[in-house]
Image 1 (spheres, one colour):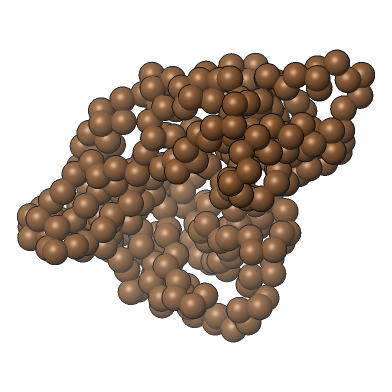
Image 2: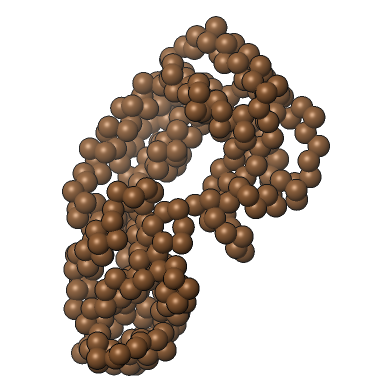
Amino acid sequence: MIVKILKNSRGFPAIKYNMIKVDRGEAEILSMANTGILNGFLAIGARDIEQYFSAVSRANSTSKKDQLHVVFSEKGDRFSKEDYGVLGMKWMKEMGFEKQPYMIFFHKDTQNRHIHIVSTTIRMDGSKISDKFNYSKASGALNKLLGLDSLEEFKLKVSRMMEYKYSCLSDFQLLLRQNGYKTFLSDGMLKICRYGKVFLRLKQEVVKEFVLTNTFDKYRISEIESLISHNSEFYDKTWYPIYKSNKAIRNNPVIGHRSELSEYLKKNHKLELIYQLNKKSLVSVIVVDRLCKNVFTSPRILSLMLANEDRLTSDIYSAKAQYRR
């Protein structure tokens, strides 16, 4: 599960956003905590809630941006609606917001069910709760509630990645990113980070030595390239972007690329094709061989993917059917 603290803003626009979703049947209110007079309303609208939150916030005349807007999201259905509600309340307590007026909204309009929490950083006595949260604090509180040990999780995932053979350092960094970790090269050190903190610092020479020490089975690589070339005759190799959202919205970020061929290979041969682009042009194809634990870049496969490639960039990135979240 991930937690995201959205940028604070003047007023409480998140109330209107979430209530519109409620009116459309795309969301529902899970909890209204410490909302005083609002609890006596027979019918409640976005304007009523905004006015109440604004009235509380006016107790501090110097603060300009008082909205707290948080999103929790996870793939699949491991957490029920009720689980999300309880988790949201516990997280607010862990962060010191349990006495603040806040609302929890459950969203069901995407593949990943999620909640939005909206509150104010101004206390009833006019004092302000620091809104300078960092990702480490927010995710640390969430992991604590979920009973997760982020260090043990890191050790487990990295130990698995160490079993792979890599053609270069960048391939190793790519697999780390796929597992949710960010990497930075600075002053000859490779830093591996997640949840806003550094888990491991390694000298670049040590990492390269590890990565390049493992020798590849050339026969296996040739076998994979022939397999992909053969199946490209039966499955469409045309690659398209995957968007973060399942709706055609402005500035919808691309989170990856796939094709009919790549989906077939992943499902039937445990081979993952990762398309690397530069300015929306395909520049390399990385193969992740889950069966024999190889990660390598293949110029031969890149040439195959670019063969007879005459599509316009505008055509590729207007493929609405590929949207997903």
